Length: 153
Length: 405
Image 1 (cartoon, each protein chain N blue to C red):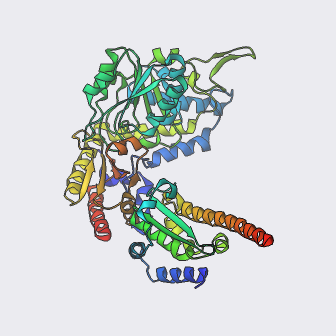
Image 2 (image 1 turned 180 degrees about the vertical axis):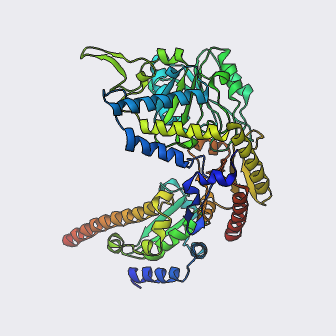
Image 3 (image 1 turned 30 degrees about the vertical axis):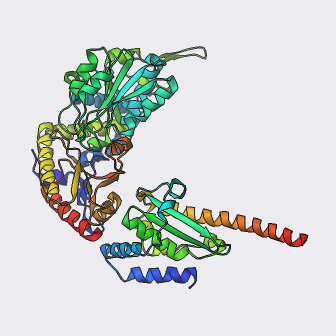
């Protein structure tokens, strides 16, 4: 599934519920499926600043795709992180950097859980994109190195 | 006292709906709602007599200056200060405390001196003193609290020494609602000739404040927490102190004579009011104080005590709910946590039911640290709240517990 297909699925799933309580129940359920970060990485290094609840997010890069594990001490926040990870985990740095996360608006997350509400949604998106940019830079560095090695051979 | 429906009709915002549900506003500790008369007073400034204060020869300026000075007189009478010279308008409690932290600090604080605050302070009555201590190489000392959140007066006595230059405490804790024994704290400090600043941000709106009987040297409060507009606050200071202190900010109106060589300063209180003041805010605040006076300050205190008792009883009946700050002497604030439920989750869902509560550390991180928690859910009530709203809150909390466990 493409990144946007995943977003469209989420929008469809949320559109089934009119009532915000039901949407929260869905978020709570989604939070249960979050790929949980290894507790040993629940450190300051992986803590995202700017959230009223604590969020730890750890990227892993296999040279092609970035995957994320995360956790939060608040359940609704966990659901939000799970949504972001569903959309962005297992993508290339370029896909993540170029992604337009329209599902946030479409399911009413931005309106109802905006950054002023201190859930740190924007801080999470920003951090994920920063990781992607860092890996992209590192990737081109590695490629440059390996092509140099190739020349030498 | 007016009936509750008459009172509520005075506050247009109380009939607003959020997410299609009637607003239940339990975040009065953060800011209070405004009665129509306050909104009209501000509108009147800008539609009928707006002119810059203390400056013009024209009618508009005269009328505005008069209304502004009348507002100062209203504030004086409201807190029972002796003189209008002792009432300085500021931007709010934070502005008032920073004024003293700077001016008092410049004049009286030297290396090795000590300033005492309590463990219950809002960041506004902590950070300015910390900044002063850093500037002057002075030391901040903290009065500890019991597990129930009560000030330990014996520990306070032990902290006082010849190095102590100032004590700064809240009248009531914004995070827990506990009322501090300020009168006792002041009495003890004064027996050593140490002045005391009282942060009245959470005190002014509950009951009667009398700076003469309290005998504080400085008192700070915000307009927006007592049904007035935002951006206006008050610094009360005993004349003997304010006369001695250097100005905080320089600018227009606070000066007497200015040359490039030297400036002499205006008399009190103008010495502390640099630049164009928020006169519309001051006039709005005066109207809010009138409103509170007309309603009856003792009646307000009684009604808020009734709401506090009712809500406390309802909340302690909920299993797995823990209240922080167990004192019999509280303003109408309850800070609590639900077992295994994050305050953010609880607050988010309550919001969707139309119930506005505060969650987090309440700008009082050391208070949270003292109790080993990250934050709480806080309800802060005032006279326009009702027992019916508390019933809805009780059911709401039970629904939250159902959702997250």
